[in-house]
Image (cartoon, rainbow, N blue to C red):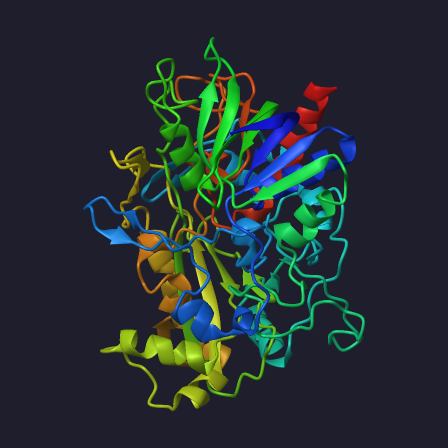
Length: 526
């Protein structure tokens, strides 16, 4: 069955890249079709239930991928309007200017980008304002120059986190307010006002937001875009192939399978892929034809390669005093982002996670066997928990890659030891400080539930790098505007375009780039 209408632009995917791009295009009057594999996330009590979200993985996609040994695993992906932003922590950091250049790590080189920080800076500012980012530029001494302050003040620390910030400063460090996208209005004491959408609860990190207080792509971009009559969305549309025309230089048809199994085809002047780094690579590989035998946009053989996902650790410390914090995700520390006094290579950054509760800790307990875990009831331990997220840079290796087997199933090869020495040293820095931060020095426990039950390959929330952009068609799939070198009307705007990933959450960079590419597409459409 063929779609009867031809569109100016088709956008495949509604996450940080696709949803933001659709929002950028919507006011233009151009005819935009959004195709989303999932549906709207059900609004129900389980949205905020730790057992449902973390232990049972209720909202995770019911599918399996395969690792390099052929063993299957459940990836951390969610197919809903808004994509993975429905479950992200809304920590919206800029990459540093140094991240756009070549950086030498202990494990190898992080390559330079074909654009500079200055090229993306205006779009970073627009992205921060669009996604309601609360923060304060100037607190982190290592951040890049900015053209405007955040539009919203930082989320106030609660007393235990303020004490942590003060204690870090006493160690000569520079903690700063974590930039976070929430629709929050605070009173003089930092509490949510009676008109605030966000209620400053302890469900901000990893949970979908029942009250629409988190700045996810559905709430911020997709729903407002659909208020324009020229924008249409089809949910339950799983795009299976992109088919090229007689010359092989353009995508003529987008072939999707609807929820009822019906095959439908759509056409547009411009096709934008934003399915997530793994699924976008899989779609391009699955779309191989006679003129593109290795897959679309893949004359360079880089599609699917250079997969990155950050070297992350979620860790729980135990405070000597109770930690009554509800909204814990308000502090970050980047003092060792590019190196330290005792090591010349980058270590990465430290952030706060959302507050652990007793259900999460109960789910963790079996994985703490053999560790020096406190002999405390779950409820007491949860009351004293302080949760940290350590983020180090993963490096792009050509053999860390996405491939498809003969049945079309996704295989993800990953060397989980890639450049982890910096992360090890970052954890050691935190461990050594615990006694000075009012915490038990010997209790720094893995928060594995947050990292997909301790399986690094399953933690795909920060996936990037599989359809990299660059100036040389021999070593990149996309040009500097994220248009495929091989096809005139195909763009990719999820995190697949990243040539490197830095050591901060990738969402804001994906959002800023989608705004940048949106402007290029609008210029092209006239």
